[in-house]
Length: 121
Length: 121
DNA sequence: ATAAAAGTTAGAATAAATCTAAATCTATTA
DNA sequence: TAATAGATTTAGATTTATTCTAACTTTTAT
Image 1 (tube, protein in one colour):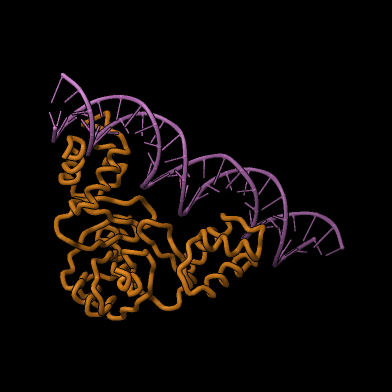
Image 2 (image 1 turned 180 degrees about the vertical axis):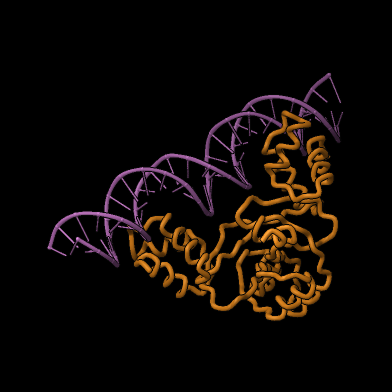
């Protein structure tokens, strides 16, 4: 656990949003101007690998990272692109039943129009 | 519907696998050596937009394309990376119930070990 | 036949992510 | 404390997937 890693983890912990590697880099640079992009990626990858944080693929933009508290799924607004979290605890069991074989996990992104955008239309 | 588009669609139709843009390009070039990568992307994007084919994001490698017959979800082997299709007709309704708001669609990839890899271990 | 529109091409450009090799830090041992 | 080995960071180059651009070609409509 190096200073750099601690900083990156802290940034993710204190953010309520999903952050791209770029955003993490920008925020980290504010507090540690010498930090390199490669370090950010190294640490994000290492921590993702270790299960401390999770990586979320977002169609049409860079992958995001977030502090993984408990497993959850994502709602993505098709209008503004913002991500929201949603918890669907029943899903994994249902998938297991349906697929009939052991599953190690899954990625789900539901596309919708977020309340904010819905109001505008 | 240009010759190029027809060719690309034919390639996707006759393939039972999910193809990356690169693979489509390679196969198309065999039959039409002058075709350009940009044309492949133009057409894949246009046809995806039009709903004729679908684009599948695969973690850790390039996006794949396939002829969209009916909506379905994906099983991805965590060992060899191969994709398989699975149909979960109940899922959209259940998601609608759970999320409580209109959803336009969803992306689901279930991670598992495919029978082939399971045998090997 | 000619003008306008649409589509294709090659190659440059971009963006995300990774790799590389040198430099720096950390911990361990003598 | 000094030497050393190992891990980590750094800067920048590289790779890979994809998109953009501008010139060229084909198609369509007049």
